[in-house]
Amino acid sequence: MKAKVAFAGVVLRAVLVAALVLVFVPQAYAQSGKPKANGTGAPAKSQTTAKPAGGQQEGIKVHGHWVIEVRNPNGTLASRSEFENALEPQGAFILSNVMAGSFPVHNWRLIVGSMTSLCPSQPRPEIFGQGACIIAPAADNSALAQSKDLTSFAVGTDPNQGGSLVVKGSFTAEAEATIEFVRSGVNSTGFFFFSSKTLAPADQRHVVAGQIVQVTLTITFS
Image (tube, rainbow, N blue to C red; front, side):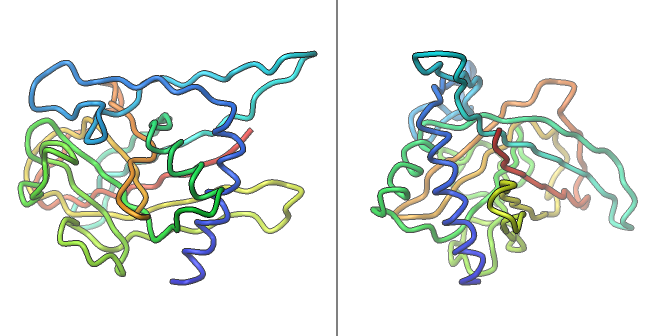
């Protein structure tokens, strides 16, 4: 586990270099009962890159690529979805503090949610969203998670070739619902939302109770 934390810390420090040249625009949900962009908030919608002065320089971009696979109890694939997300303002905040050595990195969490009730056992819908399911690592001592099989690891052995961070886990749907938003977060001095996405209809997936939802977030740089 210490190795995983160390990997996550190294990659978070690398991400900060990219975050310093990005501008992030948060988006609030328009309907009541949905998360709001105030720290308990809605997924950020868009991301643009600031252009440094002089020549043809371009900013470094951070990419968050999600893959969601819904599987039946017998293991067969029911549906699959892939999409990109955006960095949240809290993500930029935690990155700057990790880079400065002010905050530690304990672990990651992945949040998959519905505007109805995907995981009725979720005790804090005002923070994580109505019907949200939380995937945490086994070492996470919080009672908020519906699953604790999350792992995170760095990919890449040659520093001259770059690298990526993979965060993945799964949960069992507690009720029939449609997956409508995702978020990632980091446990540090508190919990900080890192990235998020409100899913377009084409990316949403219907699930029923008992199906297994496998989630992978890969963070890369360009």
